[in-house]
Image (tube, rainbow, N blue to C red):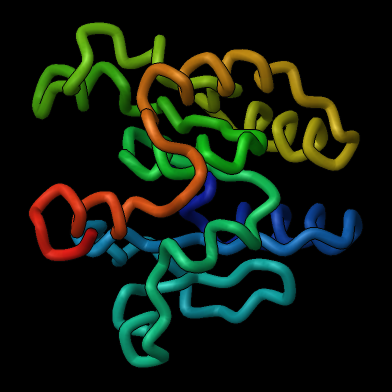
Length: 170
């Protein structure tokens, strides 16, 4: 995600914005992410969250999704789960071309499955936060349409369906 927030001063500025607007940002660090650029400073309105912390507290990351007002992500499949909540999303695309060339995408046009604002630099990130604060949501319909394409079941009960499917539960 966004190299522009990889300095302590940029994070201090972001923290100040969040504080002034009574917002709290949780940055979930991917297990494969290089953490060398992450500051060890404590911020009042930003929390870096690591898998090990969640495991130690016995908290599955997906269990906190319903408590999130919005999601900012890159190319993660978490989008398809968060779609079920139909809440604002934004996508950090600052490394889109590099990612496309090196790793590739599941979809031929991944942007078609990104129903939210595109973040390339800090000003886009702040714009998304401001839209969330103002309850401006221009992607609600697009999220619903994509959710209907990718999530067959939207009402829970998936574990029971699987157990019934494999003949363990009837």
